[in-house]
Figure: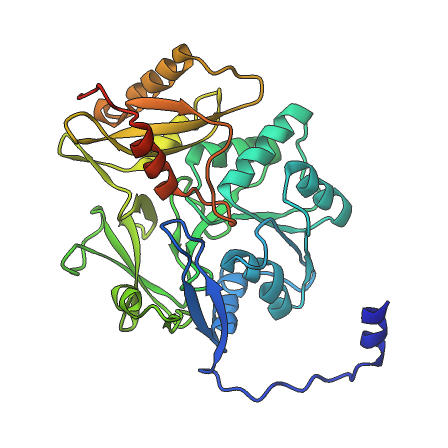
Length: 382
């Protein structure tokens, strides 16, 4: 009532604050997937730039769109989806105060009839699993589904499209760049890829010496665009390692194909060397998640008796599935039949939940710590 009264008595025109486009505007903390969160310092013009690049030029949001984001406003992804994208386009937003459980999410979709739905792969998995159990095949008026936060596996994209008749537009953004800078645009989705460069940004793949690589080779993704943060607050050394003049080092490993689509390999510090060959946890995870008994999983490295790193998998099973050594062996064999044998997890650990950040990303450093403390591969050397 107080809010309604305030609106009724407010002036028809708002007086803008006296700011410069390059003044500090707000801090956003990174999600903490690799350790302690860092405060990225954003400037006054960053929101406008990100909104015009992705919400307007890529998604084509309209004033009659109703947006609903599973990601909360404290997450860079959710801040755009749920706040400044609708403000920029004159649309409507639905904010969910409760935890975004499948029950709560589907209730919002049914009651408020959003037209644009934003979520993350972990949530899409849970929603799909719930819909399969309930026999649900409709998302009401939703015309567009968007995903970010972590890579969207191809099989999840296909299952979602098969059940709901909608494609998920996967993309990658970051706290430092504010929102999505590479994305699958509507009508031009390449399942399994992260997409193409969003208008207003530039991207290049470089080797360890900073030399740009040709299409087809895996290297570090560098991004240039005007929504990049000014730096990390009180983190001078980390700022120097990440912010490189006009470019920012994402510390993500990617390959770009000849059509300009980018394919995710993993975080630079996640890659394992097994028998002298690179193994990306994200690839192994995508395979394990295709197993019919698996809800989600996280893959990391653990040292064997020779001190050599090998993949291990932490697996959450679907409801009704029973943990057993036989199932663990079945999952290992499943990986072997879908990729090179050296990539299979040498141990499969069943867990009730995976450690995650507040934004839903897996805390791999916690998995690495648990694998080391538990000595998962003691007594093994192959």
